[in-house]
Structures are given as C-alpha cells and as structure tokens.
Amino acid sequence: MEHKELRFQRLLSNDEVTNGEPVYLFNADRFVRNFVDLQTEFRKIYPNTRIAYSYKTNHIPGICKLVDTLGGYAEVVSSTEADLAYYMTARNTGRVIFNGLIPGKYMVDILKFDGKVNVESWEGLKCVLENAEKQVKIGIRIGEEDSRFGFLESELFKVLSKITEAKQIVAGIHCHVGGSRSLQTWKKKTERMLRIARDVENILGYPLEYIDLGGHLFGRMDEELKKQFGDDIPTFREYAETVATLVRDTYEKRKSMPQLILEPGTALIADAVSILATVQNVKIRGMKRVATLDVSSHDCGMIADYKNLTVENISAPDLKSDIPTVICGYTCMEEDYINREYMGWLKTGDRVLIHNCGAYSMSMKGNFIFPMLAMYMVNDNYEIQEIMRERGQLSDITARCAIGGRRCAT
Ligand SMILES: *Cc1c(COP(=O)(O)O)cnc(C)c1O
Image (cartoon, rainbow, N blue to C red; front, side):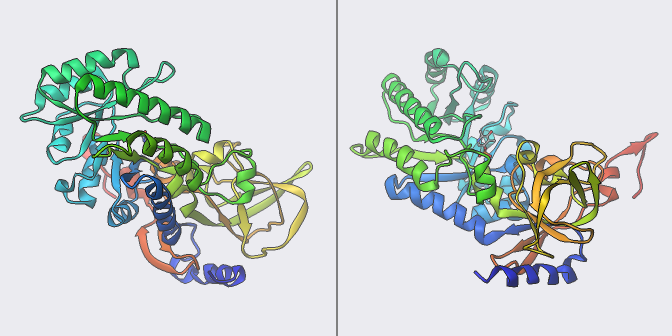
C-alpha cells in the first residue's frame, strides 16, 4: 500500500471524476480480504465452511456480484432480495439461503433450485409443505425465549414430526443471535446448535447437511473505533479457533461432515466502505466546535447512532485541536452526529474521510432530506476502479408516485 500522504493526494485528485461531491468509496481490496481471510481461517480448521453474505447489510449490486465471484452464497430475507440474488447468480447454482419472515410460494422455488430455506414459523412451514410439488429439503430456524424469531426448542419435536409426516426431509438447522458479537456468545450458540443437531439427527435417523450459525460477527476496525467497543473484539482467527474447532471435534470422525455456514454482513462490509465528504461550516458552541458536513449520519449507517466514527481530515491530516469538535450531518435534526468528540482541527472546505460506513447505511437511508450518495469502487490506494452507483436525484422520490391519479413526471 502506498504512503498515506500519497493516497490522500490521490483522493483529492479523484474530484475530477466525482466533481467534489460527497461519495461512498467501496474498497474492493479490503472487502475481498475480509471475505477470503474469514473463509480461510474457518476452512483451515473445518474445510466444509461456507460464507453467505447478508444482503440486507448492504445490497449494492456490485457488492453482491463480487460475493458471487468469490464463490459466496447470498443470504436473503425477502422475496425481493431473493430476486436480486438470482440476478447476481444463475438460479440453479443453489447459492441462496432464505431466512425471511414472510412466507410465500417463492420459498419452494428457492428449494426447487437447490437453495436453502430456513423456516421460522408454523405458517412458513405450512407454506412450504403445502406448495412443495416434489421432495424438498427444509431448514429449521431455532430461536430462543428472548427472541421473536424461529422455533423454540420445545417445539422442535413437533416441527420434525410435521416434516417427516409430509415425507419431506430436514436439511439443516439455523440460528442468528443478535445483541452481542463476543466470542463467548459465539461459543455458547455453537455448543447449543451442535447439541440440538445431535438431538435432531437422533430423532430423524439421518445426518443433517448443514449447521448455519447466522451472522453478527465483529468486523475489522481501526483502533479509534475499537476502543469504544471495549477489549473483547475477536479476530477472524479467534472466531474460527473457537467455533470451527467445536464443529470439527463433533464431526471429524464422520464420513460426511455437514456444511458449516456463516452469514456475515457487518464483518465483511463495515470497514470496506468510507465516505469522502466536505466540511460546510464550523461554529463555536460553548467549549466545543460544531462542524457540519455535506453527508448525514444516515449515510454512515446504524453505527453512528451509538459510536463516534473515525474521521480523517485529508486536507490537513496532522492538525490537532485542544477542544473537541462535534461533527454533524446535513439533516435538520439536532442529533445528527457522526463524531461527538473529534480532536483534530477542521475548517470550512476541508475534505474528510469517514470510515466504517458499510453496514446498514445505504440499505437503510432512503431519501431522507437528500437522496443517496454515489458509490465508487476503489483499491487500497484509493484509485477509482469503476462507478457502482450514481448519485441519487429528485426522480428517486417522485418515481412511481401519482398525484390525483396521474403519474408524477420527472
Ligand atoms: C441481519 C442478519 C445477518 C447479518 O448480520 P450482521 O450483524 O450484519 O453480520 C445474518 N443472518 C441473518 C438471519 C440476519 O437477519
């Protein structure tokens, strides 16, 4: 990788392409490293590991396509996302995993093309059983008392009976635990799922094809952000050493080892996207300075609600300040915070880079105040490779709308 100053210079020279507008920079090198490193660490211990990228975390088509190129699966939670996955990859590759909540006949279509469907409600199960024209292999999502998703362990016997009575097959079990991303949480859920898998196999009398442990792993992050999460941020290797080892120890003597599936969203995309923005003004408010940017915290993703994102001033990289600057977005909401205690020096017109904006950002932003930023693919040296999405425009708001029964012209 080139020296920082060189890379910063190149970022500014990219203005010829981006017109100096705020943009998302998708670092494809970094995304590929995240994918390959996570997969490699797990496969070193448990070769039959598969990575399924969580579309809802960021489903810009260029990113989904890259996942497909890397041999990853698509993890989708709606019929729309399933269609997007089919647009990325041939239907019959079977590299689609459906974990949605709204049942529909499309679930059977996914199964028909060898994709995986993890049912999570009685209604979902009923839908699959009623619509299946031939024998299908069904996955079961397992939940917990404190989560509304999936079946409770106490319901499992009945779920298995229903599937068996319908002469269908159970392919695997799935879980996705929100809240903590810690190693301890992953250890606990892996042990639980392995125990449930054994019970399920004993009842069924045949082996499962997969154990899907869901997503919610920590991604890589810079030191400034890391500090705010406390000490316990496992590396990909540490996750693998805990999780893959437990799975290997359970199945190593077995002829057909079940697939271990991971469904990372955040861990792959969060640190692969930065935003290049411009300071619009700086005001003094008591003992603080307040800077407003031409992007908003909504562009930065859910993380901005509770953490200070790392901001680098690329116009004046090394200028420090004695008093903190609250870095805010363009919305007319008082609490549009991107960093509440930035200790560098900012002035109007400075260009800044905001890091870790990949997860739950573009996929959740909508058209609040301004439409979505453009996205460019860059490499580690911030050389622009290609455009991935154009800047949004007014027609994003008016398209498909009608007034008095007449379509809005744009
Ligand atoms: C949201 C989601 C994921 C991805 O979660 P991250 O925290 O972004 O890794 C994976 N699997 C399921 C079922 C999900 O709902």
